[in-house]
Amino acid sequence: MEIRVLQYFLAIAREQSIIRAAESLHLSQPTLSTQIKNMEEELGKQLLIRGTKGSRKVTLTEEGMILRKRAEEILDLVKKTENEITCSDHVVIGDVYIGAGETDGMRLLAKAAGNLKKLYPGIHYHISSGNAVFVKEQLDKGLIDFGIIFGTPDSTKYESLKLPSKDIWGVLMPKDSPLAEKESVSPEDLWDQPLLISQQETEGGRISRWMKRRLSELDITMTYNLLFNASLLVEEGLGYAICFDRIINTSGDSKLCFRPLTPKIEVEMYMIWKKYQVFSKPAEKFLLMMQENLNTI
Image (cartoon, rainbow, N blue to C red; front, side, top):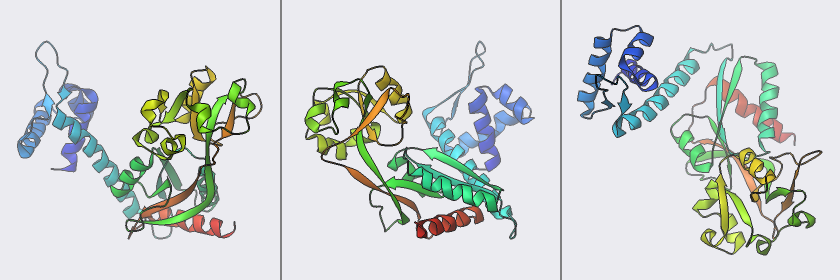
């Protein structure tokens, strides 16, 4: 399977039309059709559902959807590899890829990136947001250089830097809500309240244990991946969001406030990367800057 043919396939998936894809690739329609037909024969699977005469729209089969996802990952990795190899030995130009969840601890990485930008303005950064499962998957596939996770990493798979930042669990709520009068929030305070929780916590996490209740026994009105979106629903009075502190601004004219949980829950934060990782020059410089910054704290 050639990289070129994967690019052809993604063009068809994007355009939902062999004719339009051929035009965008500057190929004849028969040539493109033949290339895709050969790939289907090579894989032994149908990848496209061709439209009828009345409809030229092309859709992907289940196998086609799998290939699209993998092809995107492969082409991203090819581009990343090309950039790393073609960088000059004396000029540091290229990309650093980081995966992380929502956390105020990103300030530490932002500071390192800012310091490095002054020395090497040709370095660019790409941040992918997701939970720990997403971050580790991206690391294992080689699609990111570094990941930020909460909790002790698996030392058999990853190298790590412990970050001098801890996230505190608490509750985001309107300033005029009854619980806002309390200095902290207990499990009992939330048992009968509508709640918004992180999707990661629905798989059974520390919050469920802290609650002393199964999640099925609670009034979970929404799960979220991005806290900013959840905060908009909290503003509208749809529930209390259980989340980390310092992600949503609750100062000044904000309608929201944050109250920590009691008993207190803190989580340690680590920057991780794959064992035996061979870094690009930009990623290597970024790691060195992180280490230098942490040594001065």
